[in-house]
Length: 145
Length: 146
Image: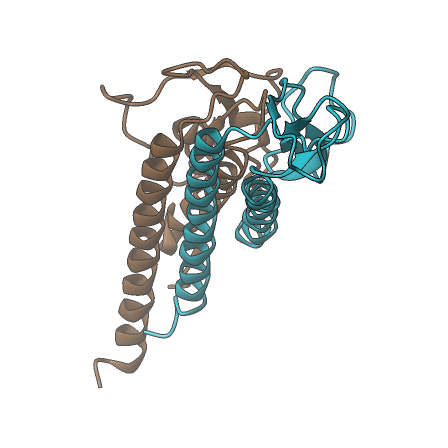
């Protein structure tokens, strides 16, 4: 029975890509925390992962829950990502500011820090899942020796 | 890989915040400088931050669409405060003008201290982002090592 490594690893590699791109967006928000007129953004993670996971993996992200940050639609709607790629550009949304400031900057440093920390933990969780997958494979190959 | 870009983004943020700290240091150091005319009196200096996109727009993107994710910071320039400074009557001061007045800088020390704390916190945020991204990349490298 041949092993399809992509199917075996599941959604985690795609999730890692989305997490790393989300980390980039959040880092940009934090770096621009003092830039007048800068509008904070975030990735619509659910949509991005759903697009990544719709390539044949069975796993889908959980439905929307309470207590999540609201995002305003930004940019224009575009076609879903091409087969085999995860592009998060189309999932970038502007954050709805909790407390707008006079200089037009919508970055809330504490909020972004918290989101960055959460993203980091999820990134590490995905890595841990992948590590377990690979050690399962190693066990199967070596027969537990 | 997106995580590599974070080094540029957070690095640009740290660089911009250090320019801001520099202006604060300069303003605080000159808070008590006096001059013989209002035009040559020291004026508080402030950096102007601006977001830059290294890959500005994806090719063919419509105007007004969402810019790329990687928004670094640059210091667009340094501006001088236009607030009015005070004059004080010090006839014995060698810098005093014909009427015996010297002109103080328009630096607001309390505002500068608050600015310093803000810049320092932002710098720490960026440094923390760098540190976290570095450990994430190192973790990623070790995925298949058991």
